Image (cartoon, rainbow, N blue to C red; front, side):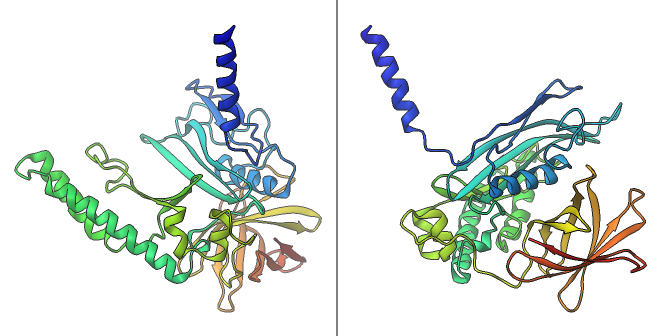
Length: 358
């Protein structure tokens, strides 16, 4: 009896020591018809707008559909079709942070094409709004520069230290010396723009792709270059928004400072009575973007040809199933407050609708 009481007490202590989870996860699961691998994908069961926006982003960018828009499996659009071997053959995820300020996870798996290649996609979301968090949101201009300097110093020291250990008279070592010497020159110019960021419960991790290409990584002993910074270390460099996210004592600030540059994320609204969602998936240095959209009535992704106009507005041209025909055109301007406003029209301009997406 005494032993059982101790075991029960131990279980209770373990459970109570777990941090509270802000979002409730009810993962989507199914068995891959070919590989028989169990697929698992995050789904937030909460009814909040933030949870809905996160689910929409994850489904749209990774499963190529909207939440609930499938016939027999949520993974049907990414699995290899018929006898094809091209598609995702393994999928799972790991949550690193789930609190009332941010939600961070890594969705990883394996894609089969000419060869099989593992992939990892990290997402960090604001728990209040459900919008993706960008590195520049978290720091002041000078703070981001300090972070860059510290990161480059650490990576440079790592590579230089490793190069000193190599005996270049050995063939394998000579190959590694050539690889990492070239990588070192590149690392010294890192601006962090291509880094993946991962927010854990007490740190920010910057992840740079390895020094090898996907087909040449067998001899890459260092792998991806990762740099961890505890929140207390980052404290002097953080913006007001970054302080709110990472420091318990900080004054609440539920969004980054408004800016004139368009931001990644889902922009939702109505076009002629139809719900539409435009995904700004990537923003380049010149403010050009990569984007696609979904309509509620169709389950398929609509590719968008994008063009940034001289007045700062964006033209998003919907491409039909033949990947050639333009079926509709959005002409929208970013207003600095997570909104895209403007018009949608047919190529002939015969039909025009006012559109506001947020």
